[in-house]
Image (cartoon, rainbow, N blue to C red; front, side):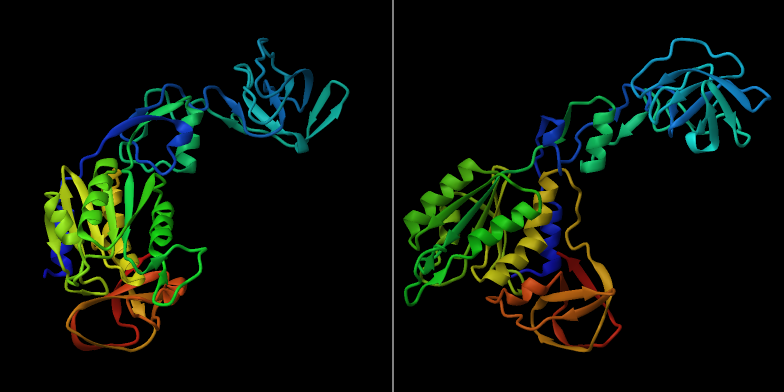
Length: 389
């Protein structure tokens, strides 16, 4: 059995093989950019009016002659003379012969005569060409997480495809003869299969949509066949249950028969002691405990950071926040604990129902508090390590 710190170090040093694909811009949400992007244009590509008003060829007087109109997308190909103005709308190209734009609320119009109601300085209400970015400047660095603003920015530069790190496909393999699929009657001695949909939801929330689910009977041959199929069809395999030392826990033996190299097995933690991490042909396998709360805890602490690493996000294992406790708490445990917690007003409250089978307190939790093993007191306002969910 290894410590939590040792488990983190093993996964931190694992060689995550990343693949690069080119995707249409609309499909790159929550992907990580795999190239440096230099702007093919200046943005804006012309001097731009920042509001509705009148573009002026300045002269000493307050009276101007209106000689035209420019809508967004129009091109004004005449040269304004001093004392001339054109009506202009937000986003339209300001003529080169205009030095300022006065907003519509600060003028009086009488037929084609424009009367300024205040003085105006050159370049007022004009956004300069390249104010956001100039042609050939670095637009986005490799490693940028592509979300709404970044995608909109790239679209404004005219990019319709970009190179990103491909996200891994993930298998969810659930074991247990006692499991009944939701929507069916529940016979005595059985429980509903909550882990499949729970882990699928956790994966979706983390941005992983390409998942397959598999169900395994509690016998060696079925476990071996399904795990072999899952490894062949996916980049990462999550197994829920069957990894302990019971007579009907066949996952460990099946993985061994499939030549999966064990990175570690059993971590000195609660919940989730019987956690296994393994590798075969650069594919990671996590055998998670069958108890739902333990399974979800291990997902947040170990699986999600590993998936991020595959996807080009350089997340650090064990990277936690430090926040103050809202109350006193006694620790008396030979294993390090990840405790379901609620963070509110930057204070940490440890929730009830910490049992590894209980999900009800996870419903309220927005964090996991890490408390090392030992016998000691944590007092109100003491700082503890927190993993936000």
